[in-house]
Image (cartoon, rainbow, N blue to C red; front, side, top):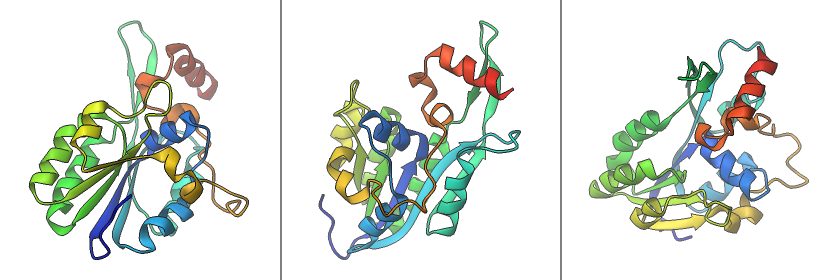
Length: 209
């Protein structure tokens, strides 16, 4: 992974997408190590973390992680999930943060030299092109070593640099010194909805009702 020493960089972390990518290849993210890794020899301006939260739950399994990130150097961007009923009458929960990521990246494009996008969502291809046209370089971090690959080919092609998260496991994976950092404990809520079998979504909704 190549960064120029004098580059102003920022991280844009799609929480659900990063969680799904790491889970697909069998390791957990240590967010303290992640911040130290990218800030160690670079001019890290900001690290944004995006996630949707379920407001009507007394306790959300992801809340400890969100609070820890908020107190430890991350800029948290959250919004409530939306509940809806599909055509078959099934209750579903949606929490998409794509608009928030796009707005922030466009607003910061003129203030940064290098943007690091933690997502494999192909919908971001046009966004990456737009910020490149404003003069920013873009690194995309996801994985193609899962089955199926978690990163869209068109996004990889558009990025200035693609880094497979597998290659960062030694730098940002949890180790024996990570016990004080909350784990991401909510696999159903944070995995992108299209990747969740309908029966799992329904079972989770019934159990939490």
